[in-house]
Image 1: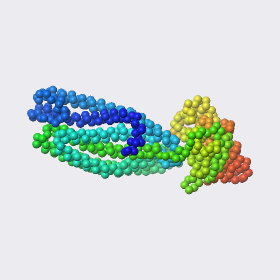
Image 2: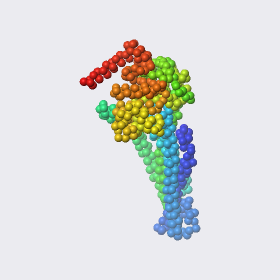
Image 3: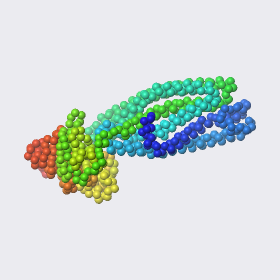
Image 4: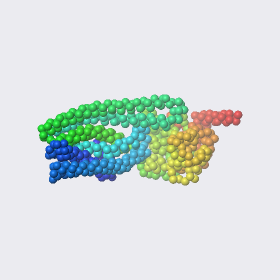
Length: 605
């Protein structure tokens, strides 16, 4: 609990006076609840019983001073005095209730927003090494549900626990004022419930951890099913995905059912203890009443206090469990937020030059014990055009990610202007690159907004110029709203080739000094691909250009081409040099040329 408040208090410290005020309103509400039976006791002893023929009794109520000096038989004045007090209590109760919840909720929502923002910023700035430790479901829960659970501690759980303790302490004092014997049964019951709470504490904490784990797994499964819906449908794998979802859903169900068993057993024992205490207390009250030790009004007050006291004890137990849930959420949230990101911390504050020179010196990246990149050395002076080829899984994408700091080298070093890449500020480093990724992600927004991701305030002329270079105009013009057409999440409603063209336009719009296109024309027809590459050559000018592709025909104009196999550069040189070597590149190039010729021949026929 100490760690919980140590980590979370900075988010709520600014509004702490408001939370204290809300807590005071809650405690005042409990004072009203506790005071009400005292007024009722006076009504019974000084109005109701006398009207039924009994003698007015001396009441133990703390509000006896309100009617001191009234004639004992002036029942009307006594009744209206006490009725007005009860009415004032009722109004004050609802005013306190309203102020408590509105103040607490309004200001705590701002703290929750700040926590969510910090979590998302951590996700955005985290290195790939850190993010690899968490599933998508983990990160979704950390950025959405956990801040709500932490906030709940401040606006609900902690305040409820204070209310419970306040009521228990004051009601014990008031019961003692009626008669000290009435304290024995509640004390024994409280000890029994406290022992029960301690006995179940560890099991309940473990249950909440399991619920979070299985909720994360289910969330990841749902996310994959939704994002991959096209693939699922095209391969007729709906039933398989339903089974995977059903398995994750069933596991979460069983976890919750196991929790229900734990809570059910504990609640059953709690109810037995409460019933036993209530029966014993009522029996004691009847005995004291028969002996004339307490009045009928005091008996009424006693039954009200004991019933509420037992409920408050059970509520205290419930809120302690809620606190455990809040603490588990905080442990995950701040565990992620405060986790040391060694890869990200390696970066400095330098800014890349206007003409960055990239070089790889004996760079290696390991995947377990296997080299995913194996002793790579490259030199890319500013303005060089580099082509990267290789079969699937050869390390092409990993190479360009290491270049940008999106993946870390385990051996060797990547340099920018003769400085290790880690000497640079990560944000400034990212600005130096325009990266069109192999896996295209488009947001639920307009075509124009997706292209202008780097600068949402850019004018339409800049956006459409980038779109024209990437041949987006060709299909955007067919939509009624053109570039203002809204596309669905992940580009739903567009073909693969259309999404790739928007991705290329987005990279060109950024207008960075280094352009990287990672197999972004695989879904395009040859004619469109050739148009885009011609546009790239014209647009690139003196900028550094890295083309990663499976199509050897696209790399003819590159200054250097490297061919990767199992993370190693096995061939490198100009197009003419590689063709003269007659290796894998030349073989692939000739085969692709023949395929193109055959396709064109069939088209002519």
